[in-house]
Image (cartoon, rainbow, N blue to C red; front, side, top):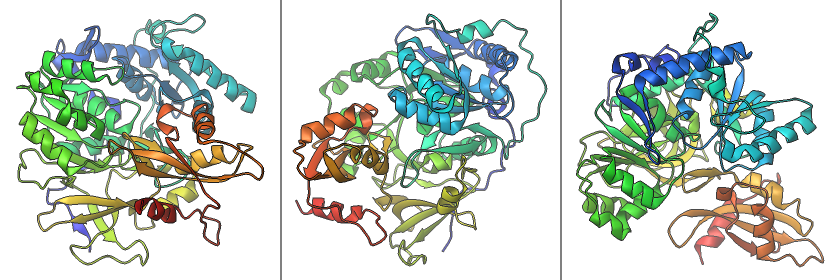
Amino acid sequence: MIYQSKYPDVAPVDRPLHEWVLGEAARRGSRPALVDASSGRTLTYGELTALVRRLAAGFAAAGIGKGDVVALHSPNTILFPVVLYATTAAGGTVTTLSPLALPAEIAKQLIDAEARLMVSVSALIETARDAVELVRRQTGREIDILVCDAAAGHPSVLGLMTGDGVVPAFEIDPATDVAVLPYSSGTTGVPKGVMLTHRNLCTNLVQMNALHRIEENDRVIAILPFFHIFGLTALVNNALHRGATVYVHARFDLDAFLTSLERDRITHAYVAPPVMLALAKHPAVGNLDLSHLRRVICAAAPLDAGVQSAVVARLGVEVGQAYGMTELSPASHLHADGNLDEPVACVGHLLPSTQARLVDPISGLDVAVGEPGEVWIRGPQVMKGYFGRPEETDALIDADGWLHTGDIGRVDEDGNWFIVDRVKELIKYKGYQVAPAEIEALLVNHPGIADAAVIGVSDEDGNEVPKAFVVSAPGASVTSDEVMAYVEGQVAPYKRVRRVEFIEAVPKAASGKILRRRLRERESVR
């Protein structure tokens, strides 16, 4: 059966992202929009709009126009949204890069996304330089690097903000033009560019605000990475669209996070499960005045029901979950404000204008009411597709528009949804995506490894971590430490293999596909 949202449909928003988010910014004028939580440096809404307009004109003067891709390589900063909206205001598309990524990983994305320009920061400039040099060697293409602050040999974005703020006229089609191109591994495989249109992103904000709203006097803490779609949507697009003040943390530091919660009188916190664990157990939390904190929303990875209950009991605030994926802009389910009777561990309700099915992944038939099945989603937030990968797009989104999430869910009689398992192979380490196929491709290139498979397993803190099952090459004597060090040298920290087990053979189907289910079963009986 097709499950419908219990909330009224919303009209698709056919506005450019920057216009929709900053439409009320001029009226808000001197209200603080973004605050650097470390230094206290503040951008007001009036300053934000002025910087966006001037940088957009600077980008246009530098040759960035309709359809051009700008790669944004930065930790969370108060200038991150300026670069984002200035790019879309100039007609371009932003592809976000992890500040933890290594040069080879960045080069792959720059090439795949066909990026014309890279914007970075001085702290990451060596990585950025190495990445663009790899692109030059592999493709012969030159990519210029700008910085948001100052780095010798590279112009600053501030230097582009010298014009009159006039951008040459052009038209944006919100339904088809891509505003953001984040990279996701989908349900399996290597990272792919997710084409999110202006309509996708703007409409998803309206869908979410029907269930969960923040207001102009609210204060939002930004510890989630802006390059990730959860942080980009909840902490940048939605918070600024609603007129809240965003307290920006360049990276997650527990002490700084807790200090900011109290000092900055935070009203809304959007977090991943590891932060929930700290809120539930860290002794310092009990000494804080968190009387201003009203809601905590957790997403990006499964949350243990016991941890959620512990946070509710300890903080006395409303705690809920959300569900989605990059390919859904990202939300399809969300906790509704004031729904205090919502069962623990549920991911909320279907957003307006969103349909869902629960399907047996083997037979392809809808399961009986109350039974678990793979979650399929249809709605205006479904991505346009994977950039340059029509076959992989068709494998994820069927001819009727249903996106097959790869997650197993169920729904109760009150419309509360639960994600109970995952049929997809993607590993979620502390909210970051780790594609097994990407790590396996590295492992099998090691001269001492004949074959390998990677799955997610739970560590002592309940986090899902990558574990490698390795088949040694004949005559080789590679060790677990050597395997982990080999991978560590080539990937971002969150992709590191944390455990290694040597086996005789990797289980595979006749087609050659790795049967990771067998490895998970092997792990579950330990």
